[in-house]
Length: 252
Image 1: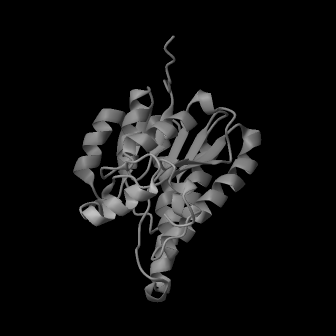
Image 2 (image 1 turned 135 degrees about the vertical axis):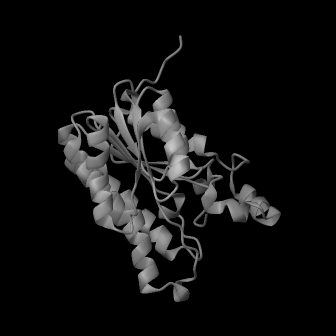
């Protein structure tokens, strides 16, 4: 017997959906499940507008380096959609620099976009949600697995894991679940240049028990589960979506 995942009648906001990657795949999948989805982007107006035509919601621009812009975004989405039931806080920045070369300003910017903005988004979204609301953060296996050159990024994602647990505890009584997904090596714009290097791909594949890199759709499917009624008793956890990468040691 077929079982359908339905988000009919739900209103969602997905951040970081302006480029090809996890945000865009998630927005499309939530819409296919019946949700109306507002899509956030930084400056990709044409691509985000085309996606919004598919998902039934507005395309909303905001620069999360300004945390107040992140705090306003759920209210903008709720005004356009008539409410808000789901937040997928996916937007983020990657910085690859050795510890000694990472400036205070660079560290602060990565944490502002990846962690502070996620907190502001989720705090404001929670205030708009009813019982059954869903908040899902995009973290990374780097929240557990340190990697050289990722001191700012990895520490911001470790903060996301803790944030999900703290918020889940406080919001459980209101019937709002809070979880995170931790992607491994996913084929997105973040690593497009690296993926063009055959040596990089060979090294990565040697670390992944599943024998392949992941796709944005692999992550989107797990986000859909967490947003659905099937995950009504799941909160405060981070689900690795990594093909087994995090089983293989301390470095991703």
